[in-house]
Length: 378
Image 1 (tube, rainbow, N blue to C red):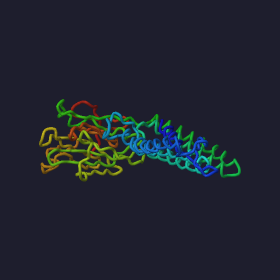
Image 2 (tube, rainbow, N blue to C red):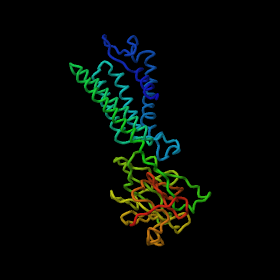
Image 3 (cartoon, rainbow, N blue to C red):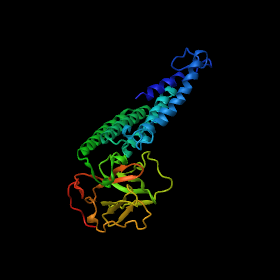
Image 4 (tube, rainbow, N blue to C red):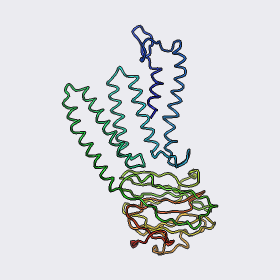
């Protein structure tokens, strides 16, 4: 909230112009000559502060404060915004503030920059769904769309000899924005219910294992979700070192964070297993077996098209050895098309896996912690 005022104050202290007699004077106070006497000391302080503030608060802070992977701060402190959007929003606001100060004598430049920044923010907020709180996405999209419309009308009013076209644009644009906002609000009432299903591998969790929960539920911030890809990093002995998922959220591709060790440091090298699901293929079952070393389980995933994938320690030779051949005997199963994500527990590796299911799904697990369901064949 204070980024633009602070930046504006620093810029004003060095905002100078060439006066009629050829000397630099402050735009805010023409009686003060720039970079002479007391102003030279003020400028010597303001310029380093301006550079420091721009680098730390504008360019760096968004990636720390909107830290979805917990690399810099606790995951609980995540501001629920994508860092790129947070950075872009600050840059656009500061650009508009800087242009308004430095180019106050050139209103056409100010109008054009305001329009470009407003349209860019409106497009990004609408197309990328940057916040994990769905209502915030709707409100921000409406706000930036309205700002872009007003900026367009201001520009048209300045370059056209008649005011009829800007008024016509407002009369058409405002009802369209209201209808679009009402449609999103109405759609939010039918927002799918996301539930955490039972996990496999929970039997190995103990107080000594220091498990840390993880999930990608914050990525699922839309109305229609589909799990598209799974990347797994596996070790010959230590088991499943990490996972990363790619989702389609209302048609937008969203890459989830890496889940692995407690510091979320991605292992070197490419993933050892890549699973890419077709549009009509969904996960329907999951199972696990103890690995060769305690707390190094092997996981198995089955899809509706009959594909089976095995994740975990690879030194046993046969990836699926010991797993039940019939998917109906696996420990956790889900209805067709309802699995939209994963959650689980980790420490130095993935300990447990569970499904995130959408809408009114019921799950079936052999440990009795979830309700029964009808499992599709295949």
